[in-house]
Structure formats: structure tokens, C-alpha cells
Image (cartoon, rainbow, N blue to C red; front, side, top):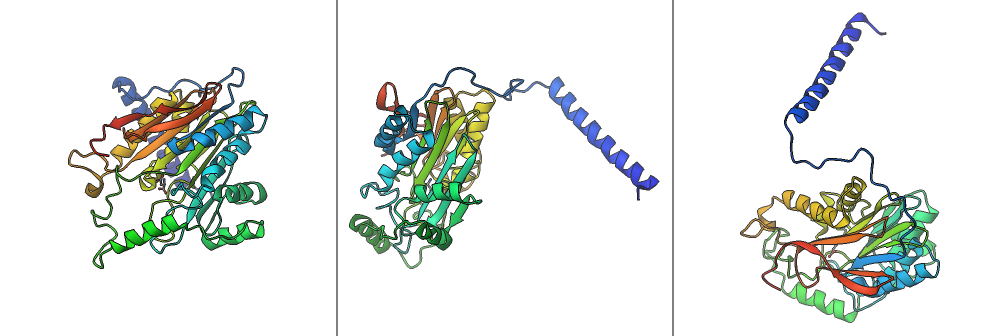
Length: 361
Ligand code: ASP
């Protein structure tokens, strides 16, 4: 029943809402800030398709070349990014991705991957997947053959086997050796948050592959694949397979992805944040740097900061806009702070903008 009393209560709360909104508006008008000014309409590229272009993390030079050639031959950005990433997933010498990836604390390789199709806004992802060399291909089947987006652990493995993927041992002799050495150094008193143990940071060779691509028809796709943090707690899933963190792709605007410390990226939903910043007019490079600034401002734990208050880990972002313009950023300007690119100028590395100069490495 709409009683008089309820009517008055409702009107009073609506009234205070309106006046609060008006007050906020008035305050921001009378006190100019240096906040980003949004254009009236979202950024939109109206010109002819600018593809093919493929960009990737620094371990993806072959991947971008493969992706570019496939797109040049008429394949979609989706086909192209998946074909590119599979090179690293099947490479036993890339110990940060797929087969040959470094295992978890128990010596078992657990893989995370996700794919997103900008044309349909559909996505698929797997987390903590064991026994399958090509997690990005499983993510694709989830995207195309199910009503779900994210499968993890044993469910993801069973699903992959049902779709014909074979169960294999993903631990190479080299990865096993690295795991044995790591285990030898463990101390029975070790605690997961012991600072000495968390000294991954800028000496830690960050791996993981991210590839974003823009095809001849102007469509975008993205994929990220990783074996995650080496010697992680079994079951740990990083940012790579999280849609909006490890990758995000929107055919209206662009595509973005990340590599590096997933825990820092998840908190700011990096890839989605970058795509949104591009949507409101930011250059891909600026958007990548701005996302890193957000990472810095959301990292408060002392154990993660050096004596100058800078994050002691590496994190990188990559972005490709709908008009073919790209950019990348790294927290630390290490040797690997580069992005692999392939367009009509051929495969090459492009330096990332960075926030801090690395004194060691
Ligand atoms: N982002 C990955 C994760 O946190 C790791 C990496 O890129 O090195 O799982």
C-alpha cells in the first residue's frame, strides 16, 4: 500500500538525493580540478580498417609475425592471436607458458589462459589447468561451445579431454630441475609472506604471453596465456585468465593485456581500465602508464615496496587501439621492457614507457 507516510518518506529521500547531486555538481563547477576531462562522446574510429597489426609481450616476436601473416592471408584476429600464442605454449624452452612452464610448489604445472573476441564480446578462460599443453585453445572451446566463460582445475581438464585434447606431462627436465633447486632452498620455518621468499621482483624474469591483434576487416581479438607465478601455491590463479585484468578487448575501442605480477593487476582490473581510458580519448601509451600509476597508488604493503616506496615487482601493460595505434608500459625500465609488434613494417621490438629506472638486473 502506498501510504501517505511512505509517500512522504520517499519524497524526502528523493529530495535529498537530488540536492546531494546538485551540491556535488556545484562543488565541482566552482572548484576546478586537474581531473581528466571526458569528451562529450566516447572515442570512435570512423576511418578505413588499419590492420593487420599484432602486438605482444617481449617473448612474442614469433607470435606477432605468425598472427600478422595469418591476418594478411585473410584470417580473423581471433584465429591469428590463438595461432601466435600456441608457438609459445608448445615451446619447451619458454618456461613461463604452456608446455615447459615452471610448476607449482608441488612440482605440478598449472596453466591459466583466456581469449576474447572483440567482434562478439565473447570470452573463454581456464585457470589452474593441468595436463594440457595449449590452454588458450581450451579457452576458445569454452568460448565457442559453452554458455560459460571460466572453467578451472579438474573441471577444466575434464572438459578439455572431452573435446579431444590429450593429457600430457607438462614438466620438462629443465623445469623439474628448477623446481628441485627451489625446493632445496626451502626452509621448514618458511612462511608464505616471508619477505626474503617474495623477492621475485625486478630480478624475476616475468614471462607470460599476451597477444592483441587487429585484422583486415578492423576486428580485434586478444589472448593471454601463462604458467603463472613459479612455485605458486597449488590452485593459485593470477590475472592472465581474468577477463578485464589479464586481457580485455572491445571492437569499438581497442584491446589490452598485461604480464607481470598478477596480484597487483587484478586489483585495478588493468586491461579493462586501459580500454576504458582509450574509450574516453586517451592515447594507448598514456592509458598504459596511467594504469601503472593506479597500481602504484594501490600498492600499500611494505613488503612490496623498496626503501623509496616503489613497487618491488614488475608489471607491464600492452594496448592496441582500433585505429592501429599501440602503446605499452612497464613499471621498471628493464631490458625486457619492450613489446613485440608486427605490421606492414615487419616484426620488431618497441620500447615501453616506464615509471622507474631499474638499478639492478
Ligand atoms: N601475470 C602472471 C600471473 O600473475 C605472471 C607473469 O606474467 O609473469 O600469473
